Length: 71
Image (cartoon, rainbow, N blue to C red; front, side, top):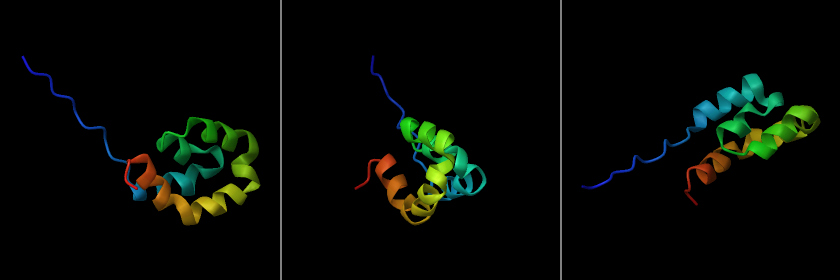
């Protein structure tokens, strides 16, 4: 008997940007990428007063690659 394991679903940059745009201040894009602690921090600080959101605007593709395990 052999066991097969399904590959984890790959995160997508487009979905991450949509979540960032509509729910960024609540950190939903961070939860999507598996960064639970940062997501909670975004909730309590409203995206680090918007500075974190601005940084994420430019670094989100790199964050998605890291979440997918691609260097």
